[in-house]
Image 1 (cartoon, one colour):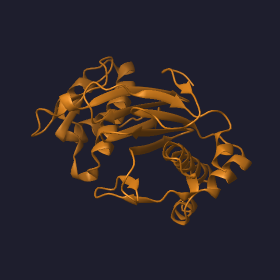
Image 2 (cartoon, rainbow, N blue to C red):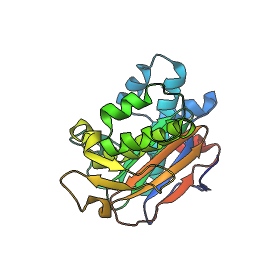
Image 3 (spheres, rainbow, N blue to C red):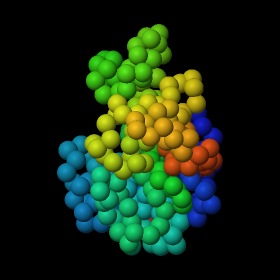
Length: 247
């Protein structure tokens, strides 16, 4: 793990918002433990992936979410039930409990948990994207697309991925899905600290949100967005062998 300082610790209750980094590179017994705590619906979704590696990473990331939330609530991971809010954001079926969000890419997953405001997280594997300029011009806000186009070529792809993950984290925190077009708001680009800069029709929004750039390692980059001004966000990592704690 590289980049940010992720504190390795056992999952449990947290006093403030946090993001957990999860290593999804697991052996067969660990993957079996992960599959054992999933719901019937989750197992069916995992089975629909064509590639075994995608199926395994889906199962592992959702098992990690169950472990982290279960420890925070004092519940067994397998006993948790989930529902979808309007817009598609997952929530605990009983309605109470912390706000949370999950993202995974490559061999990394990020689980964000907030006892207060809404939270969203995104992680993406760094990879060549020859059409990044077209994507930015088509979907990003004009100021973001212009800023990316002005970057020297070697800096353009890292800046694009940072912008993308910041925007995705905000959309996922809001829980609006496709109802919030990416062009309706702007975020900062590195080397500036992660921040919401503008939200159409809501000039007060930038001051109400905290963003943080994340470097989970494993060739990935990410971001978290929290509905709280200037808030601290702790960074934790599940310890090696974490699936053994699912039982």
